[in-house]
Amino acid sequence: MSLPTSAAAFERLPKDHSFLVELHTAFGFSDVTFSGWEFWHRIESSAVWLAREHVRPISGIPTGAFGLMASKDIAQPTRLSAAFIQRFGRAANRGTLTLDCDGTRIFAKGGAQGWPPDLTPTHYVIVFGTFSPTGQHSYVAPLGRGRFERGTLCSDLPKSLRFDS
Image (cartoon, rainbow, N blue to C red; front, side, top):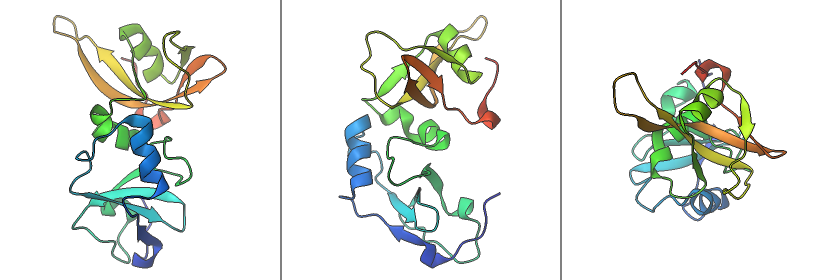
């Protein structure tokens, strides 16, 4: 559960803020992806939150009721939260990686695997997993953030979201 906050703890980010520019550049989100949403900097923690455009922070309300955390650090726009990726990841057209069923299992458990040789290394990528339920068609869904480290793809899924696929 998130802690109550004060309305003064949040500052709306202008559309030309460096966080948003880098977010769009790294992942290729279109201009309409976030229409109806506004990005907010939570000054006391450096986190960036996303809330519907008509929602404003209210003192004493838990921060989690305000919106969705996009990133824990305004200085790292590509280090997106799993919740943000699961909500908006499908809209990215750059900086993504789709894993096959075996790679999805490894990633979902929090493991590391070889970085695909045809993908240019970047620090963070949006990872999609391929799921193939028995007797059904396979499908692809956004899982979370992957991290390039020493030639491997490391899963940055929070422990609470890891699972055996």
